[in-house]
Image (cartoon, rainbow, N blue to C red; front, side, top):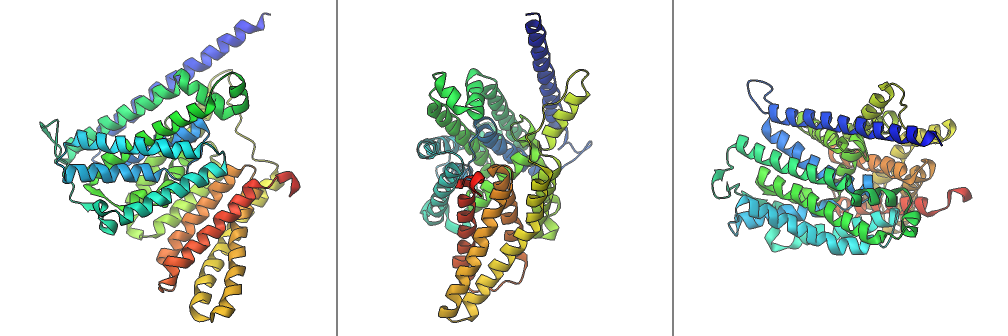
Length: 459
């Protein structure tokens, strides 16, 4: 009976320490972004910082869904991209002021999130991810065909306009602090959502949905609201980005953008408040400062991501928070989720080069066979290479201790060999971009789905 107050006091101390850490991190973040573009002090390129801020808000919105709601979406690029298109079109063709253009893009992403969420939350796990990916691809092809998007050219020359009809946003410095204000407003909104009663229910659903249902919570409603909020905040990032670069293009609505936001979140720290901001800054830095090496940036990102997954399972900021907790007297950091026994860890780590070789051989061989052999010879060989690629999708999901880790490894392999496909001397026949790349990706995804649905105890 005497231990309850002590436990309660310890919990209060933990909450106070966490709140103090958050205040320090927030002060450091604000100070960095305020000082960074100032010429006499740091003089970092403001456009690069604006890109990092937009991606940071995008990653925080995604983290709200996966880190606190437990829902992994592979289609969040549709909200970023559609909001960018609507914002750019309304500013250029309808003459909207920047604040109205951003509101129009954000509202579009929010409305798009409602039917998407209603369809997706009916399923869980890998099925939820595949539904969001399929819907995102539908939006992508709509953006390719729709007249107002400009197709592959996009919407160019978007005017930044005057904020409230008074403040000209054409100067880069003025635009930068406008973007910083939007980022801070979105970040603080996400912080408030996470620490509200709604956010606590989301965490309960993430940890144990059946128990949350037994307590009387309508979990589907909470997940839908979280999905729509995440979509709207992603749209806010996309709408702002289109004004920053004065451009809306297919890049922001492509599925690779959905993969990049997963990388940002995992790199910074899944389920942390400030981790996605750090992950977005790291990824944007790699793209900016390594731009001179061309498409090899994608390969560098894949290697760095593999290293971070193996060495920093909590992410950069997650590991930092855990280290600070360990340094606090009388308090041990919460243990990271187990990655399995040593032998099992060796198995899935060792699979990385094996899976990489399988995908490389299968993609190159598929294209070569399809181009240089008769159809009656190439058809069975293509099926064989497809089986190799399906195995490359099946194995990481099966060998990894959790399907999410397996999907992360699979995504890394995707990025690695998408980069190789761009920089290597693969055949340039129309068969490659139109058929064989799609065939390769689909077979890997099929393998991943099969690997995630088979009971591990039976394997």
